[in-house]
Image (cartoon, rainbow, N blue to C red; front, top):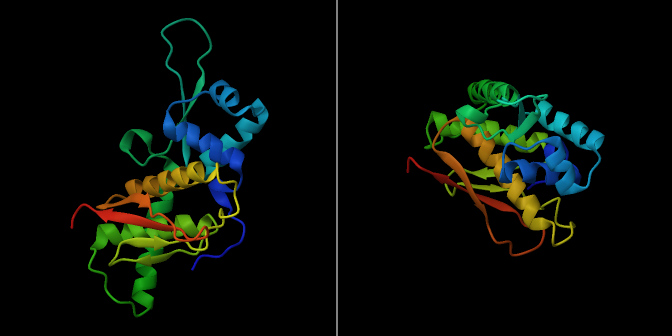
Amino acid sequence: MANGGLVCGPISTFSRVQILHLVQSQSPRTIADICDATGLHQNTVREHLQRLIDGGYVIQATERRTTRGRPRTLYSAATGAPEASSPVARDKVTAAARRGDLMRRALPVTESDLGRPATYQLDALIEHLEESGFEPVVDDRQLTVDLTPCPHAAARSKDRPVLCQVHLGLMQGVLTQAGGPLAAAFVRDPALPEECIVQLTDSAA
């Protein structure tokens, strides 16, 4: 089961969650766009964006202008697609697959029926979740990721949908970047506030 402690990484503060929600909902965004939508100061937004870029969750590009004026810096969600891929995220999934192979060679583990691409996707997803402060329990037969108890269970009820949507988007970005048949489909309706189970789908099934 996942721990009930503080979450670190990309969703450690709600301000960062808000920024991720904005760039996931519509990309690209400018710093001015994000400031207007969140009410945060430009310096605060820049700091959060840099943390997200360093983590591989956001990418930046310089605007291509056809008119006079200084090009703006544009920020987009790193979705793992070829046109929205972060070099940090690419390095992470490569390293996760390498560590996963080492672990499977060193430890007696039950062979999964998912195949190598999906196994590498799960390697990357597990490392992402652990980096974010979770202790995921993966059921590769039911294709579920149990993150119970949810560290966001105590969050304001009006914030929970955004938190879940952003987190699901981050998980999907990791799976897409790793490449393979698995996708993060939805968060199951919880029986209890602290329950969090993410349902995956397998396009190869």
